[in-house]
Length: 402
Image 1 (tube, one colour):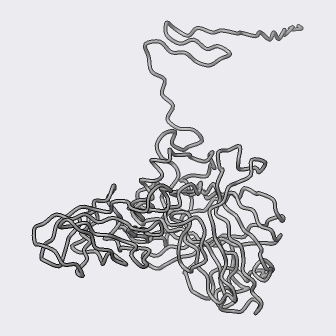
Image 2 (tube, one colour):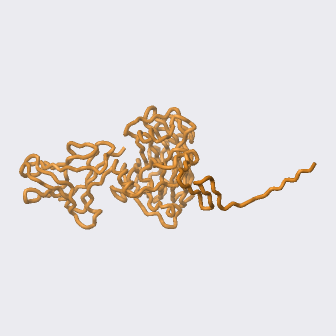
C-alpha cells in the first residue's frame, strides 16, 4: 500500500520544437516561420512611445543661456516667472559623466539658477518650467483618457541644490479644464528619477486640433495666490488659478543662486516606465522645427558673418521679396523673430549692396513658407537680389510655439 514518488530534475541545453524552432541558452531561433509577440506588459513593442519632444535637452535653437521671461533655451521647455526681485538664469548644460543620468545617454540638462529674491516669497510669485503637448497628439496617443483604469506615465531625472518637496501640475485645456498635481521630494545635489503614473478621468477632453491639450508644469515655486492648503494631490479636479497645488515650500525660491536641473523627460501610455527613448539628432531637430525653426544664425557657424538668408527679386522699385521655405510644416503660421542691430543685414542687388538693421516682417505667410521683405531699399523692379546676414550677432528664426 505504499507508493514511492521519485522526482528527477533534468537540465536541457537545447530543445527542438517541430522542424523550425530551436530553443537554446542563447534564445529562440525560428526557421521559415514567424514568432508573434502581441505586447510586453500590456503595452506596445514598436513605434514612438514618448510624447515629449527634446526630453533629453539636446536641441537648443534659440540660445544656450538666457534670463528673459517666457522664453526658451532648450526647445519646447519654456521658463516663465513672476514677481522675482532678480531674474533667474536658465541654460542648457552638460551632465557630468559621474552623474546617474549620463550612462543612460542623458548628457545634457536644463538648469535653472535662481536670482537673489531679497523681497522673500510673495503670494503672487512663481517660477516654473512648462511643456505643452498638442491636443491631437494626446487624443490619438492610445490613452483612453476618459477611463480611470487607463494610464499615462511621466518620468524624468531631476536634481536641486535645496532639499525639499517640489510639485508637478498636469493641466488640460479643452472642455472644462482639469488639473492633477503631485509632490516629489529631493535630497540636495542628488540626481533622482521621478516616475508618476496618472489615470484618466471622465472629465478630460482633448480636441482634435493643434492647440494646447496637456500642459506639464515643473514648479520651483508657486505663491499662495495659486495654491491652497486644502488641495488634494494625486486626483483630478477642475482647474482654478487659486487651487493648482497644495501650498509649496519656499526654501529653494528664497535661497540665492539655488539650482534645479532636469533631463530625460518621458510621457508614455501605460503603467510601465520604459527606458528613455533616444532619437537621432536629425529626428529630434525635425520634431522641434514644427514649433521653432532657426533659419540663419551667423554666430553658430564661427566662420563668417555673412550667411545667406534668401534669394528673390524686387517686386517694386523699393520692395525686394525673399522666399523662405521651412524644412517641415510648422504647427501654425509662424512669427518672425530676429536679432537686430546696426548693419546686421545686407541686401545685394543691382551691382551694389545696401545694409540694414533688420529685415522687416513676414508677408503672405503659410505653415510651409513665407516671404520676407524690406521696403526701405531703392532698386529696379524685376531685378534679382539676395539677402544675407552682415554680423555674427544676426539671427533669423520662426516661431509657432503652443
